[in-house]
Length: 300
Image 1 (tube, rainbow, N blue to C red):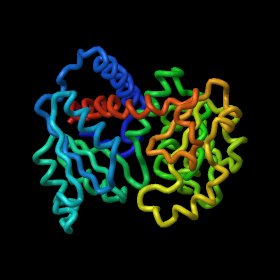
Image 2 (cartoon, rainbow, N blue to C red):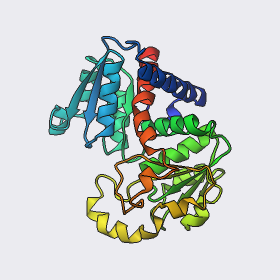
Image 3 (cartoon, rainbow, N blue to C red):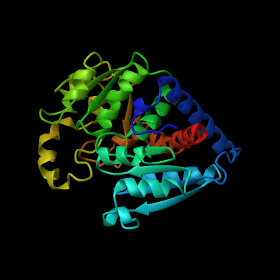
Image 4 (cartoon, helix red, strand yellow):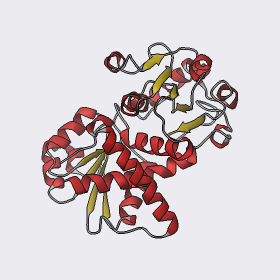
């Protein structure tokens, strides 16, 4: 049985097959020829962090594949009242076929997976957001083909998305440049382990030069609301704009995992700029996660 807690839990071949299947499922959905490949299967969805895209994409995806999804917030489970995560995992996994968890502490997710009898998907923790990377890599492939050998630039905080891009750089063999203020880098261990393909570049203009893909995220993630004003000042020069994109390759794409704050980490019009594929990226969460659920359930 396989879990998907970070990208490295699956091989490059497995991840590429999931992306291929996501593209196929997307085409079937558009053509109205989707098959109920997860008929009578149940997805348990545990949310300790709020969500828009994650909940809709997993719930709609399960419905499209003929299954059913159960939404559980921290207010809906005994885990939110102090039940050990190990006990919750044992019980819920005995009743459903697959589980996704969106939480703060990555160690909590790992404990949940160790005690689950069905596959567990990381739908976001403070450390990683691997489902978003599946969607991002599917989107790049649809628009530009293979990302191998390309340069990708991350602009902003060295957060869970940035750290997932570090994992992606190793898996899909691309070079990653990270433009972030001093003190806001990804974890030192990840930078050291991937020093052959990841560089820290303080100047965003220098960082985007030669890039085929430029990616950013909100400056203050969930749980960092008290730091928001301070971060706005520190990250002010790390805004992605149409002007910044002119220093990247002529055919460079722009992505953002959303929600985006126009006028802060991006210019007011960046989401709809010529280089932006953000709306395709958002939709692809649905199809790449359908492919992921199919794969994990079939492997269980």
